[in-house]
Length: 125
Image 1: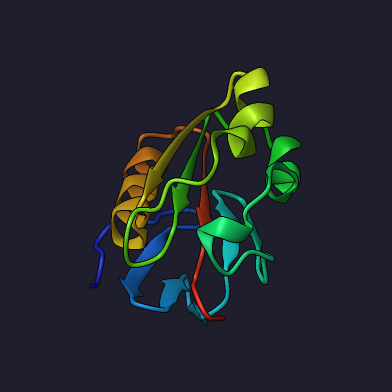
Image 2: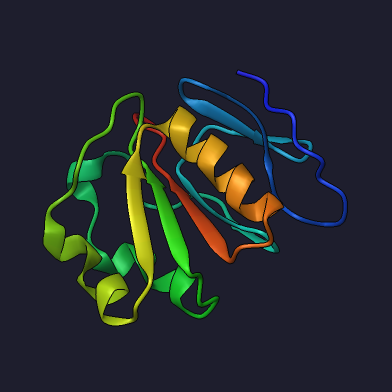
């Protein structure tokens, strides 16, 4: 699915998404990744929602996002609630969605100049 969003400036936005891959700027990614407006961390460790642990969100904490959008693959899968304990303790909101919805939501939040982070699990990577 191609996405249209004015990406003026040097902000990371998702330009397209399809099962197993995502395009950000001019680069296609096939492994799980963390995306922030000004930073991108490729090769994020989890490859499915069941592997996810709170420590996986550590790289995002120094950026102080107001919300983390978690994409869990082709379907929405809710990890154990304890996974989000650190985010909740810090007052960081979070949403769990399938990858397509997560990419769209992240783009909307970034276009509104919100401090959003996208944690995208690309299964089988």
